[in-house]
Image (tube, rainbow, N blue to C red; front, side, top):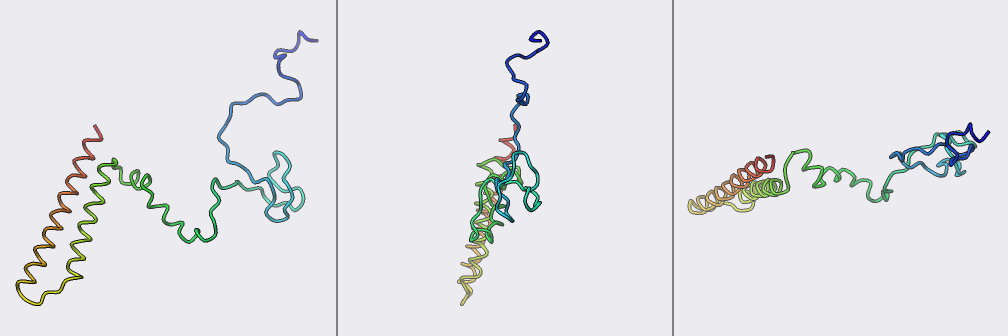
Length: 146
């Protein structure tokens, strides 16, 4: 009988050793009735509720309205725009310069021709700084892709 066994180190009642797979963590207790799920069950044996996966990081209730801010994470923005770190920094600096050019027009009001010319000069300087930042972002993007 022992000659018929091909893998004597594994006992007959144990499942075969499988390679570890990245499966999502499952809930351990039913959310409706609170009873503990049986091992490997997809439904609650008491109330029949479907077993769902556990979220990796439980989000507190006060943070749920701010969930849209996840789209502003640096890594997701980098992947979405396809930029390197240096290129992303230059791009954000260019956006900041454009906002500063808009803010100059909103904050300051011209009382005379000299004031108007000064405000336009400040806007021009901010827009030139934005242009330089955007060109730097483009050059850094191409330099990082080679």
